[in-house]
Image (cartoon, rainbow, N blue to C red):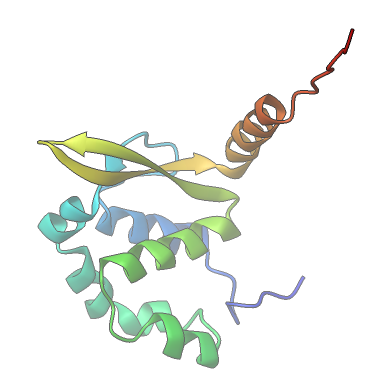
Length: 133
């Protein structure tokens, strides 16, 4: 199967190295993080320092798009792309921390994510029958 992002499919070892920049030890780690955690962990700086390693996987046109002007949002996008190759995703939820709304992220298997989406759709698509006397 051809990939629209990568010329070389990222291996699991490099993906785990990337996860370490986000404070996550493995794909099974239930640890959550926020953008503030990425600033504290200097994730942006770590990705910038390893840009040549990351760049080897991307197609040239996609590397220009995703690997220039890296900020915390692009860091999360890059991680999502690498996780998707290995059938994992980032689940995001809103949470109030010290009275401030933040997005928290957690690595989950894609199958689990699809199951949650299907349950939500099922709840929202209940059939309703109206009877008029």
